[in-house]
Amino acid sequence: MLRRFLVIARVNANKVAGFGEELNEEILSNELRIALERTQRQLAQARQKTNRLAEIVIDSARDAVLAHPLDRVIPPVKDARRKGEEVAFWHLTDWQGAKVTPSYSTPVMFERVHLFVDKASRITEIARADHPVKECVIALGGDMIEGLFNFPTQPYEIDATLFEQFVNVSNLLVEVVRRALTIYEKVTVVPEWGNHGRIGSKRDAVVKSDNADRMTYELARQVLLASGEKRLTWQDCPEDIQRIEIGNYRALLMHGDEVGRAGFASPSAWQAAGNRWKAGAYGWEFQDIYLGHYHRHAQEPLSDGLSAIYWTGSTESENRYARDSMAASGVPSQRFHFIDPAAGRVTAQYQVWLDS
Image (cartoon, rainbow, N blue to C red; front, top):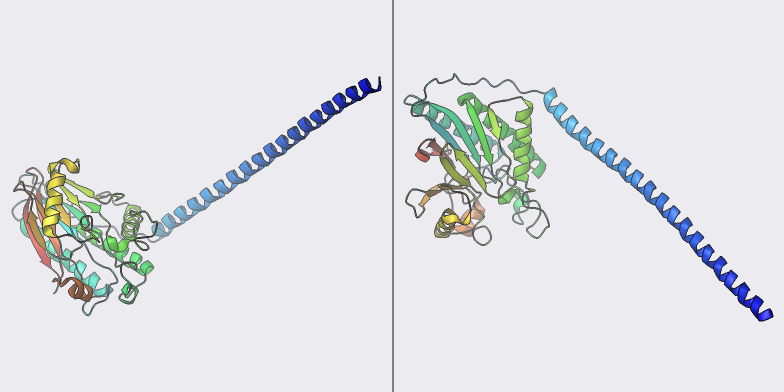
């Protein structure tokens, strides 16, 4: 009898223990659920707060621009002619904003870039005596700022911090595009970023397109869009190769460090790469390629006999690093083309000198 009682007592004790475990698990589950719901509410509140802060920053930036509106751009007189129309093409690249050499600085950059616009306007008026030139495509080739992270002594060879470069070059871009809008009925900007806009060293885990050149372009674009200018189209540059389309004319815009080791390749290496891309490796039919980076004005033919690689110089002068390390030097210049949109080819080209 006693043994039977002990067995029954043990069974009942196990049932009570099991019930206690189930009860504890249920209490724990409820606590976890409550904690999870509390965390989710906190995350939602934090997300709303973050989104609201972002909205405030965006709204404040827009309001700041609108509070100081730009003067209205006076458009040119419309040209009613249609026959023989050409499109102006400006390749502006390697301004190296804030670079200091014996003959170059931020004020000199402003002077030389505006000198280009002066000369481009005169060239356009000469062409208009024969045929209409209503549109302009501005290709920005990169290295518009000097940056800070490309070589060890760079911070000692500038006259402005990275922030000041960002602001100065953005303002200059706004001035250039606004002047172009007074010369042409329609303006399209195709931007490309360069290696000097790189943030951090090459070893840093920073996405290439997070580039100070691109940020500079975006600030200028936002300022111009806020002014309500309807005759301007400004593209973005999330990739490292940009596409130019002017009627039937197609070209690639690159900075120039996409081929070769350490961002340098010979003209023959560029020709080989260009021919491969034209043969189908790039996957988009094009005729010409535009490069900066090398601070040289040149032209190399591609294998079809019609296409070319066009190299464009820099506004900078007396770069001692280029002289001593690569035995390279160039007179400051930028490139101006006329494009026949129907025939899809370059009809005239100019090296616009900027040393005087």
